[in-house]
Image 1 (cartoon, chains in turn red, blue, yellow, green):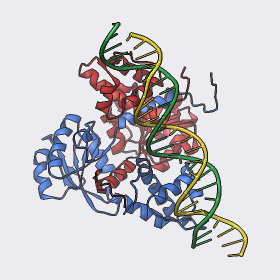
Image 2 (cartoon, chains in turn orange, purple, cyan, red):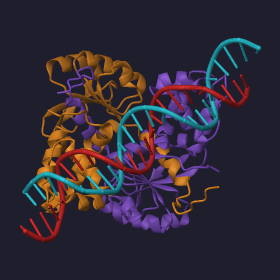
Image 3 (cartoon, helix red, strand yellow):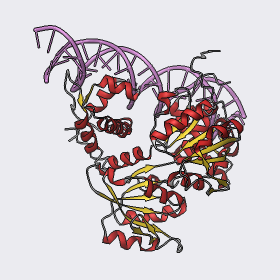
Amino acid sequence: MQGKTISQSVIRRLPRYYRFLEELHREGMEKISSRELSERMRLTASQIRQDLNCFGGFGQQGYGYNISELKDKIGTILHLDEKRNVILIGVGNLGRAISEHLDFSRFGFELTGVFDREPSIIGRKILNLSVRDVATLREFCTENRVDMAILCIPRTGAQEVVKTLYACGVHAFWNYSHYDILADYPDAAVENVHLTDSLMTLSYSMNEELCPTSGSNE
Amino acid sequence: MQGKTISQSVIRRLPRYYRFLEELHREGMEKISSRELSERMRLTASQIRQDLNCFGGFGQQGYGYNISELKDKIGTILHLDEKRNVILIGVGNLGRAISEHLDFSRFGFELTGVFDREPSIIGRKILNLSVRDVATLREFCTENRVDMAILCIPRTGAQEVVKTLYACGVHAFWNYSHYDILADYPDAAVENVHLTDSLMTLSYSMNEELCPTSGSNE
DNA sequence: TAGATTGTTAATCGATTAACAATC
DNA sequence: TAGATTGTTAATCGATTAACAATC
């Protein structure tokens, strides 16, 4: 379908476009030009048109872009309209927060299984699901379709769990652990969330002089 | 001190260097060459040397880099050795998870205040801190030094809170809300964490054919 | 010293921006 | 039709990679 492969830079901007378009749609706006969108998103109109044209001509000369239509088009590109089953491994603070805080269904995901290895946690309820023993993971994945796994466990546990999951055909991971999945499974779909990296980046920038005007070149 | 400004691409790689060096240090390794580090991190040796040389010559010809020393140098660049006070706004699932899951002290941060607006939550304990009424935020920030705020509240609440905080001199934000702080305060130090963007990116990549070998150019 | 590996300059590559013809 | 704004090509910019002289 797509002629060329899409660069990572473009892909990483798509969710942001989607969020902005969702918001504009909610506000009742019908159309928008690349110029106006560029001002709101603080990027260039050129970039927006380039990005969108990776996927086809979604706009109309002299008019702009239909917001609702464009939002849906990007949603389709992101596969948000497909139903996928997700399981969560690790029901600590983070796992519980992610599963209860995020509305997965907005993105086509449904949480269908929740696992932990702590006996004291197994059997508890998370949303409408009772926490299963991670020892039964293989069994669960063979009996149920699982499209993606969220890993909220430490690095060591993650390696073991991914091995099991990958063997069962689960090749997509939302990885909050620091285990480097791609090193072992280069063809897996992996999205790493390194909260500590983000915190360190902030740490760097908060102490830099925030004076873009001071241009001493000596 | 620094001759040139450091590009965002370089800065974003620093935490990852730090993590890898920490791990190598823990494993007891003493020195490493840019080539070996490049293999472990899956990037080029050139890039590593370029990146590090933005901040000075940390290596030694014919030898490589001293791991412990380099780790500390990068830690200093990231200001991880400075003590900063942090407050958390919003003690829902996410706020609680972040404050209890992450060890802030590893990065020089100390959590000194926790706020919410829900009467049912105010007064509860998070770590060793009892949750304060967000109405007392201004008071707290004038009486105590606050270097950074973590925002785990919805967009609407965030706008209000940032206004108060910014006026009190808090100019750094770890922002889990979808409120666009930089639009209103362009000189603030902001690190946005958009978990949903990450999820959408994964959604995109998990359905792409993961066949880098298939090179049909038609 | 010879070997290894950095620091740094030059070459390449890719991503962003600018420009403008196409077209609604 | 005239005006607006896209889609797309060309120009620019920045980041990555390669190469190699400096040096431990």
